[in-house]
Image (cartoon, rainbow, N blue to C red; front, side, top):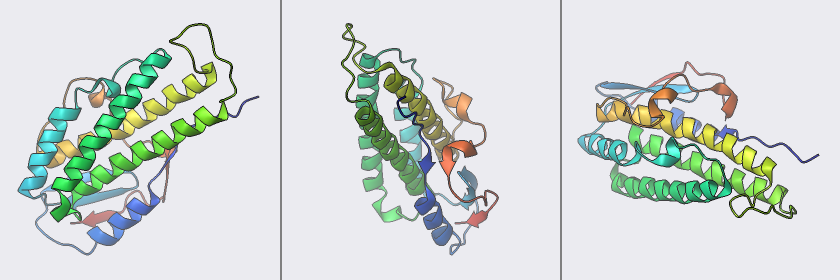
Length: 206
């Protein structure tokens, strides 16, 4: 029987970084943000609000965050789209280089780390089933088990990115976009897909 793998994020270092950085700061509280295992209050700068609004506009209608994949061609397209999202996030980190200790930069780090861990997981499941001889249809060249694990992991990643975008909407002072599947993920962060501390009621202040 082939190994059954599932994606579980580990943001322990980022959460510890937030704990160390945000607890030392004080300022006018304007927004309250919820992250996995931690909540923070922050005073976003004008630059952060502008970039947050731009990110919502550019990412909210991405098909990879709401589409229904069915075949390996869909997987290939979704991987390309995720790399595109990754490039956008890195570009925005560069724009925020003077505010790298701010709340928006932290959210971008959470999104990028989620993408990195997802792509590492995708490589892992590809390797674990690399000896499959393939099927007859060109749109189904991956083993069925690998395809199923990919779809499940993508759903986990969608939830993570969408919840991050929900918090970015708070910084932007905008409503959560109603397009795609993003609104359906604005519930609590699911603990079962995150490895981290149990102190999920920890309050920090920027």
